[in-house]
Image: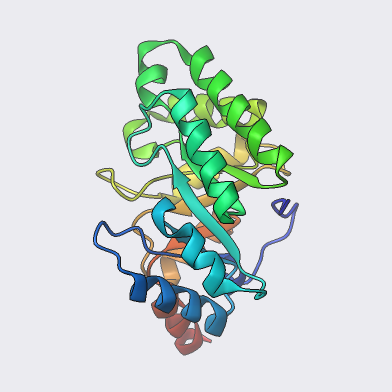
Length: 229
């Protein structure tokens, strides 16, 4: 299982999960995503569940982590549905599962059910030596709720807490990364995602405490990094 780093920051390329979750993504685009991740030495790719099996074949023995999404993007599926999604993704070859937290449950005040769901999903992932990232969708939360949800995910066994799906009104914000890092243990990673399109944004997220960057603009970010060096 790939654990997040403790007190160390990766290079930008080594932090980027090259992502394509577009509704109309094609087989050719999966191949392109994987080939680009290999070429630019990104840490991983993130693809829709339907394409996990193909992406795994395309990756082959290359050291790229394969992530997919669970309960995406709204998260109000039943826990059993999410567990089944995880099981299928693991069978297809996923290494990392990015599951959306049930905010409907959180907003209702029945947060204990959301915590139990994360714990069950974490157990299933860890039994398969896979990584669980939980997306708390910061755009819908107050600062107090960001702190609460981050701690809930940590206590339930999440390996990473992730900011956003990219489908909400806003994505990752530097101030939210700092806030999350201030309350999470060093061994719990943070994945910043949603709206990160420039080198300046990616570098700011890492400086604020993020360990991973989820973006579809990884190549552009590296080109800008090279121009700024």
